[in-house]
Image 1 (cartoon, rainbow, N blue to C red):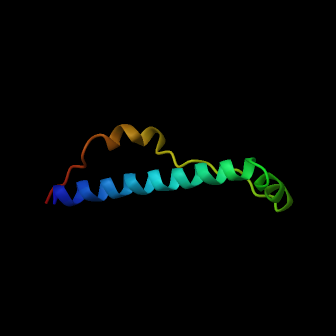
Image 2 (cartoon, helix red, strand yellow; image 1 turned 135 degrees about the vertical axis):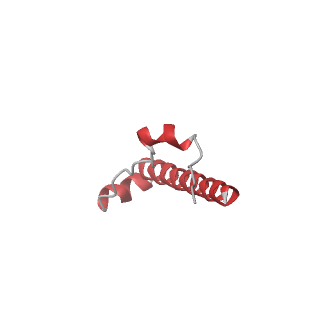
Image 3 (tube, rainbow, N blue to C red; image 1 turned 180 degrees about the vertical axis):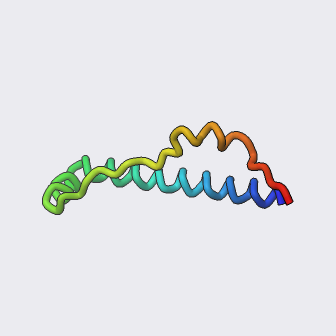
Length: 67
C-alpha cells in the first residue's frame, strides 16, 4: 500500500513538472515576436505556475495509512 501511495505521489509530482513546463513555454511564446502580436490581438494572458505553497512541508512526509 505504501509503495502505491509513493508511486501516486511521484506521478503527481511529474504532472506538476509537466504543467509548469508547459506554462513556461506558453508564457515565453506570448512574450516573443511574433507571438506577442497575436497574444495582444486575442488578449492571451500570462498563466501562473502551479505551486503547492504552504502544504509543501507536509508533502515531504509520507501519509499515514491506518486500517
